[in-house]
Length: 171
Image (cartoon, rainbow, N blue to C red; front, side):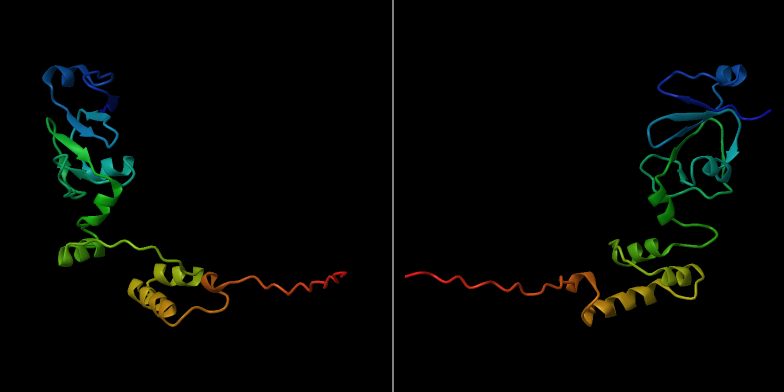
């Protein structure tokens, strides 16, 4: 006996078992687009998150605190799907608090930057032999010392002079 899942809008429900419909015992998950998923049996957050693309689940719409993956979603309650960026910024039991949430707690401001790195730097970041701070320090060093001749900010086309023929005027 598995869960019955139905996507619905408003009060229209299509495939919930009759006994669950009569008792009113099901749990509702409100997705980001407003669609409602109704389940007839309790489920773990981690099982539901896999199907929702790794997003977090919270108890209320305005709450940014994500429920832990081993939390059981109970019948008769309404749960809300968090956007992926809100889920990533909250506590993860495997990794602990993320660096984004730590910086937000320290000064209350979240800064987002974009940086261009080489494939080699990316491989080093992924293998954890290079830290993000080292990459950022290297990029700041590169901008403060000036750019090389091959950098896009200093590039100019090489143009040769075009000799002009002198016109002799008749007087």
